[in-house]
Amino acid sequence: MREVKLRKGILFMRDLQNLAALCAEKNRIDPELYVVNNVQRGLRDKEGNGVKAGLTQISTITSFKNVEGVKTPCEGVLRYRGIDVKDMCAGFLDTSRYGFEEVAYLLLFGDLPTCAQEQELRPCWRRSASCPRTLSAT
Image (cartoon, rainbow, N blue to C red; front, side, top):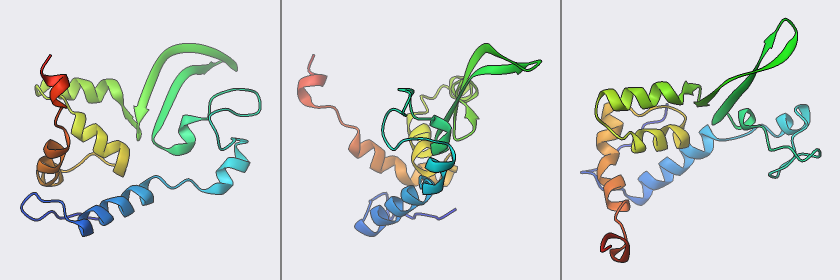
């Protein structure tokens, strides 16, 4: 995994370029997958169904299972980058954290951040997370 180092919690242009390159690398879709899986490059395929989430490797949704050769509905499972969202949320609740930054990092860069990566990016997240005065005044 490519490391992005921040200096004193300040995001410099080179850091931003490294983060953008890492994001592009982790979210690239092989164009051949569109053909192999018959997926259109829009929000709907030819039959009007939504684009398959698993093609992006960002999320997968399991809503059916195969029971003796029959497609059978099951309790749904949502996974981000292969991690069950329920398990992730349980971990955040167990440690009294919201987990927003970790999930955002996971979705953008393909892995949960290490403690060091999270600590380095925390000042950047915080500077970018201020609420508009009109919203915070209510």
